[in-house]
Amino acid sequence: MSVAHRPSDEMLASFAAGQLDEGLAVVVAAHVEMDHVSWRRVQELQAVQGALLDAIEPVSMDAGPPHSRLVEPDKLGVDRASPGGEPGLPGVLRPYALGPWRPIGIRIALRRIEVPGAEARVFMLRAGPGIALPHHKHSGLEWTTILSGAYEHEYGRYAAGDFDEADSDSDHTPRVDPIEGCTCIVAMTGNVLLQGWLGRLLQPLVRL
Image 1 (cartoon, one colour):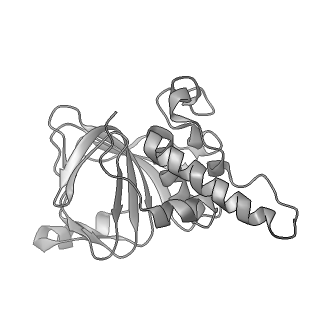
Image 2 (cartoon, one colour; image 1 turned 180 degrees about the horizontal axis):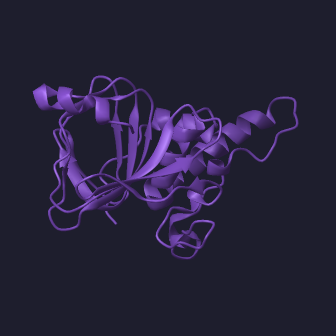
């Protein structure tokens, strides 16, 4: 797997320190499980943070949120499964309840992931080959890890393992790979803002 797009060091440091909203952290963890470079970087950051903690008075700590217990990329073949034994899912999803796949458009389906207490809404999105998603912006954050297949938009091509970060400054029109399709895990705060006259007509129907 050749990963081209990764979270920034600042984001990985916040993730390693457990400072991210859990919904957003789940999507970062899915990427880290798929990418050796980011996985090693998180281990380095946690080691530095651990050394700093050794220098202060110890306090009692719990085991941390479920997403903090990462699966090493080399072990994904045996560990990457949901609580029900469903193959092909990031190991980080094991503690969470997964809803059924529901169609939200032609050859597009959504599956919600229940992350209690999270600010961000977390879901999986599956789109068939060649689908062009509507031109849109965001009123908050949209963090995505590609699980399989690929898509591309104005900021580049994103394939399995890649991490895509969008915010209120982003303006894009994703186009799904014409052969592979795409399945991804998404964490979103705020709303999708469809653009153009057709987007304004469809906006009341969008519930992500």
